Length: 79
Length: 317
Image (cartoon, rainbow over all chains, first blue to last red; front, side, top):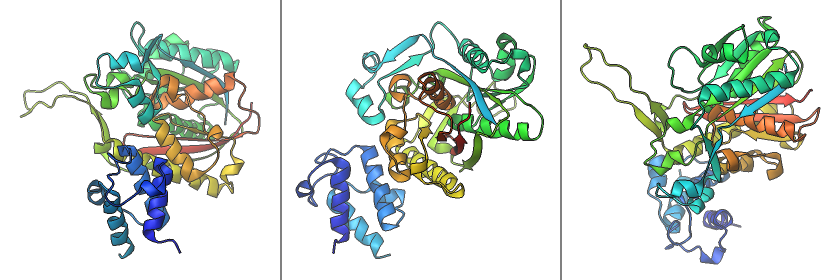
């Protein structure tokens, strides 16, 4: 069964058109994976729809790396 | 209600992304990647009143009506040189009209809001033939030293003549008060009794927040319209969305569904022309014979406020 991280990774890969093997926790979404600010808004909106959560602006502003996003998803899934 | 004539007008001056890159910190690639815009038309030798008259006259001619058969003039305009009188008053005589009219400012959602008002006026028996004119010069709100807003906009006007019919099926309006996401403040005259003079402020836009709200609220409006009319996205022939940013359009499409071909765009050529964007696109699609009788069309627009509005048509000629 796919974990939250698996689903998040698949969603990042599909939005940024990169292979899942490139998406590791230490990678910076913007500098390493090429996301721009609107890509990240789209990713966060897709995650909100997929997992039925609603991020705060402060939470998403703090996300820089794939690991940050995994952590945020874990945090919200436990709420 | 149905549309029996359309017209549009754009300034003669076409400005490409490369033209902008000569004096702004930007590039063709940067603008296309983030917005989908390749060029826009800017007022230079003509003014917004000229564009208004041109678009309105074309729409009346296309309708087959005479100007004296138009019962009411509804104008959507965010701002122009005149705070007063309204744009409707300024252009009424030059269009050849003698009917009454009024201006509305519902930002980029003005066209769909004007359609709702026109529908209500017809149903109440106040008017039979209504001219809706959307005329906008958003390039005049921008700080042209900054790339964030100035690359996005273009000037233009679009008009439609409406008459009685059964094409206009439903409409949904949304307002969420949030000034800070997108606003433009004009300076006003100061009085001897004010402690502080408040200067004008060129257009301020919080792009990420605006993107998020525009995508989610437009999609909600559209899905609400589809649901309450027993329709799926597969039943819709055209989703005509406000041409604000190609990525916003794509974001809405991903939620609502349907192939890209059902989401026409003119933003590549004209940029964001505010409330004029949908009537300009409609005029081009009709001229290209893309719209057929019976086509189901959803229009959805959104903008500063935050406001959004969507409507459903089953097209009649």
